Length: 303
Image (cartoon, rainbow, N blue to C red; front, top):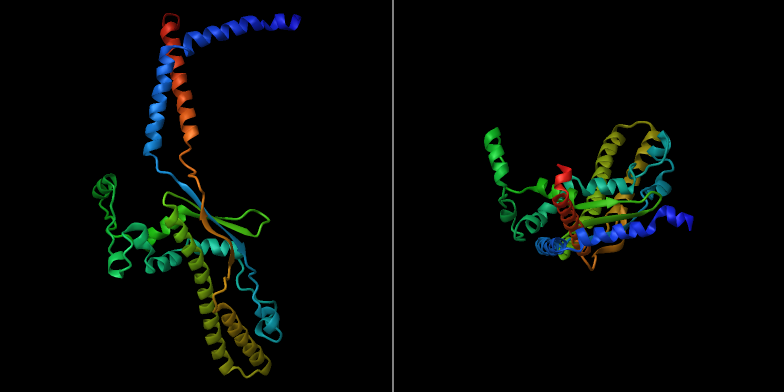
């Protein structure tokens, strides 16, 4: 009982009730909460719902199959070490390719620039002449500083759209890659993400095929002038190895990744969060109401 006396619970309860009836349960606070509800409805009505669109991919092995099949006696065996298709890892290569200008250029040529920035017309004459709508502030800045704004959209704009809107992430120790985006038009985002994943993987395969073809061409030149039988044999095996790589890459199978879960959208929008907007606005308006009432009643003591 002595503890309760020291705590003076009755006195504190009375003070809380007095504060409630004096500053909260008053007409001004009720009006403030009503105003917060109106503001919340305006914010909700003017906000564009954003859906989370994502796909789950699995890293494919990045060691060339020709290492085990054709490496014996080849140039790599002669000069040391096996051959891997890439050294950066499937995830890092996939991510860098996805955000590259070369990939954006491939997507642009297939008409995705028209679908993102224009009407979707796949006529090349149209999507290479889509006018950019610059902000008035950008036009004024360009006029004052003396530089020209780009007149038409290009693959660089599509690259910026991909880099800013589509991310690829991988948890440490996991072989899964998550490609995600937050978009208002979920149907378009799903189709764009699907094309982006496939095109990124195809670009990696075509680049490796081109690399193998150049190695074959250069090795053939060396083979034609080589007089050493060991070196000639190694060069011949290298050519065979590169042909084997090309044969394994010229197919419809994925190279960097396998699609585990294809692009799909969340059922409900991630933003705006209606509950958070209403609750946070109510707290802010109620706090301002209490502050205003407190200052008004104690202005003589405060000033």
